[in-house]
Length: 328
Ligand code: UDP
Ligand code: MG
Image (tube, rainbow, N blue to C red; front, side):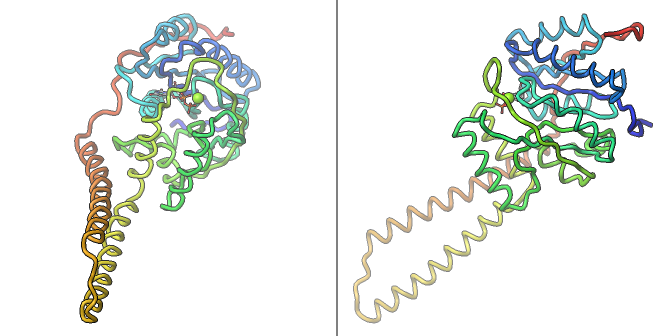
């Protein structure tokens, strides 16, 4: 039934929010203005909404959002019980937006240029089911983030992952894609990898990024590392192959060393013992520990998947109905 409305689609802007009290109201009013412009231009349906997912914020975010949603039907708040993380918050929003023909996910800080929305929608109207927002510039990132991001894309690429370079989670997905996503009930969610792997026709929109206008990044180093390892372990088993490969290489080196020592011994030379032994032991313990760690990482993922725990728990949804169509 839904999904066929390509001319005048109902858009849900899904916005995950974690401790965003400093900027959330300003972002909300900018988003609302943009949405109204698009409705006025007939680019999207008038039942389009802005859906905030409060990801267990500990500050005043929920109160601010809840007040806004009580006053204005354009805002919907889905509040999660605890902090489930950016990816799970996005999932919660996408799954709750049941009336949407299209969902565009965007960060609460509006670092991603909201003016690109129109291009996203154009691509959808031209037939794309997924539209990826790709950032033009990385100036707003520090050296550390730039460097880690770059090496991450390199590593992912080497391992055969299809993730888009410089694409975070600013993207449009259609009803078709949402229905497909519902079939992927994995606990270790990595949307940036999952969505391209579905194979729907996609398009790219470039946009500029800005500095955060208030508050600070919610992506701590540990959250970034977790996202990065999730990205690898939930899409490829290449690291496991590397473990086996390292095993074979060290075994071959071992055999070569045995032959070498044997030849030396036959020739009556003295093979130095202590240093060689120490070096080999140290290196090998390192290799074994690392390999166990990699295997353990996958084992942990299997453990978590088998539990089939919900990705999020909804505490409450705040949404008032539009009484009449005389809005604005
Ligand atoms: N976020 C979230 N849960 C978290 C961490 C972040 O919902 O546990 C949201 C956050 O409020 C923002 C988006 O995810 O809307 C991206 O976070 P942020 O802007 O801090 O990341 P950065 O742009 O620095 O990578
Ligand atoms: Mg940000």
